[in-house]
Length: 615
Image (cartoon, rainbow, N blue to C red; front, side, top):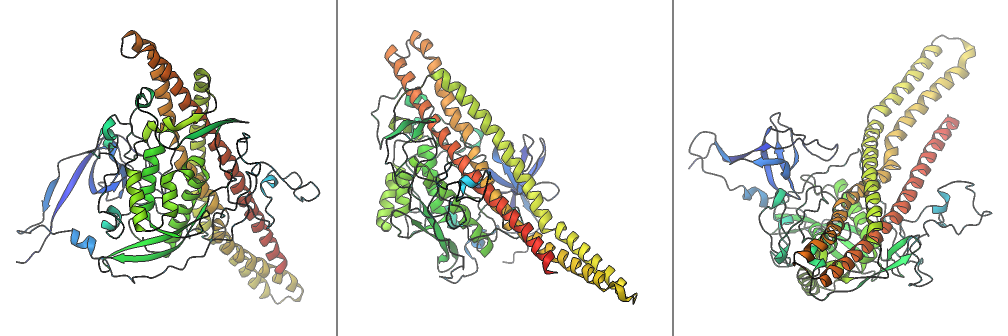
């Protein structure tokens, strides 16, 4: 039988709401009432890939569209449908153990105390430099580690030497891409990212909860037996559901799991920070394959400071960790999403370096959180012994019942706050995070534009100026007048200087703007988590306010009302601890990255000055 045309199925969808794409995120702007063609429905995270009538392709939120019934398009002949999965599984056969050469992380440095300087006035040369307090590193650089006990969290409950840490520094060997922004697409790698390797684990695991079809807003309900769902917008529109706060407020079950103490510090409630700050290094990416080379993947080494022994993980393993942390702690602690996946170029060296750096940043942020870093599932990820240990720990984590709002049952506060007062603080923090989110997005947009100018038109302008100076010098030389040699030499030197500046301008964003953009990118994801974390707390407060009516209606007892109020206070106490953790990290991160940015700017202009002297 001869096939001349393929029988393909095209799925149309109607746009329900306007959606404006964010620059650099590979998104597609659509308008209400527009008809689009779905090109890929397996993206995940609440997104689909679609094409508009103009042929533009990009990502659109599933919640914003209504998919019509698929219509088959048959282009002539009695064509039989092709098995498209054939193409998914037949990729070019890679070298089985080809290793990508990537610069290794810098030697870890001793972390500094954010907010305090151990350098005497006689020793410092920075005068009134506001960033100097964050630059106590003897090497002249700065520490990328977060101290074991951030500023304002001293409680007297931990070791007096709580600031000491032998943790790894955050490696910054990768100096950024040639142009900004980075590709933020989705990884469509077939079975490579859809199932666990047969060598690692079972093909599918239940995860300890029931996965149903898309619920409200297209979210996947992951509430297990408890049913009621709430979508947490971490990756803009991810599928995550958890039980409402009433499950915890009225629970009769005894608390299970490791207790999470919350103490009263100088700034208010704070988590219990460990004496030793955990950190890890993500490094040494290697390309592997399975299915006789038909499927390829990248595997990274993760080296924790606790053991200094490397464990190997693929991106899907990081994704599994993210899902477990989100399931267990998402009601109390914002869990930022992982770096974006990629459609094409997954094995290109530039992309591998970029993903490794962003995975490093995500892991370092998780290590800095005292609750996350000490959790059993995170420790398993960092230090499993062998395949059997991994499988057992994985199944145990997936069967954990203390997830969602029930994680509050493990919190042991040192005191209980006044609910009216915490409502005000909560609203103030909510307004702050919204404003900061706007500021971060604005800086990302401006940074994007500046990066493009520095790698595009701006160097060309400097080159044109340099060329003009040299042309004018050539014209002056042609005059034959003997007394203008000094002038023509100066014009030629000025022209060469501008050509050198053009090259420096093109390379500069990778030296300064890159790290500023990466930090803002991290905080953009983190800030997107807070509205829902705060929403859980607000919902609990509303339930407590309804307690009198419920008692009067005979739905709960007076004793239940007291229990609800106490437990809502515990939720408030933990929320304040998380707010204080966020602020202390924010101050440290932005002092660190701004110091580096300004230092690199100063070096740039010093190099320009040296060029002038050279010529």
